[in-house]
Length: 392
Image (cartoon, rainbow, N blue to C red):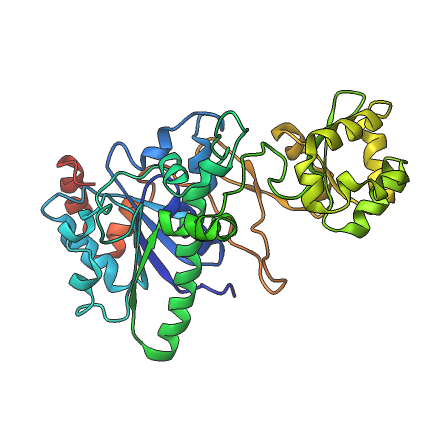
């Protein structure tokens, strides 16, 4: 058995935050019924065509789900949604602010009829407050949360290369739904979970927030280097390749000077005698390190760092990552079906050894509509009529 076998999730979702949450519930065995707009579906389906004609975001966040097309504004939609919720354990939505309430899908509207239902609302800024109705895309939340102010070079801020605000909100939705299911097992009662992208990102920003407490100067933007620890970041070897390395304490600094740079006298240099002094003199120290690496290939630098037990990494690109030896050795790649054929998919991180995660197909738009409606008691002629009306 998987942990969520027998749990049904109904989701009105689009983009990344809610789909990432519900895909992980599906990984654990939940049945996830994804309600999509007829003819168009989740707009993330058309973000790009990079996965053999399918969208990269969509195939990532939507495997193992069932796709039901439904015009939620159609006069019969509420009846269909109500029938779905009769057997559902969780409702997830990240529609525009206020849209779920207008459809009668707020927790307050549903709690009396479905007392055990867990309703998870995911939004940019939360269910209330002066920012409630603002549009919230990932980049905008990265900016609003202060993330951009500490990310990038000294000359220019930079966004994260993946949708971290969406991912953060999706993770908090996922973990809180799991907690709510445990709580319901004790009390029999459902609940309302209000997850905001802003609050999720601000939680992740807690270190720089505290660093800048009481008006102190915030961490500077330091590119790929650490803003407050040095040396910690990218350094170029003699073959032009980049090696990432990081030191955490004075013992490692001494070993780094002696075994990697082969300049033990640096350990007594007053310019570099503490992390704070090394950070203040980072330009001088960087020049010394780059000069020491100039006669070495990146592979030789890594060999020295490994021998000295100094943390390091190669700066892989996406092609390197597909071929990563560690992932291959641990057999972390599986295959899942899609409307475009089989594609590789990473096994979910951290799965216990007592079950195999669910990794079923990425659904075509509306692929399960007829089967789900039949399950709800709709006859074939009724389904045909709804289809003619573009209701499904």
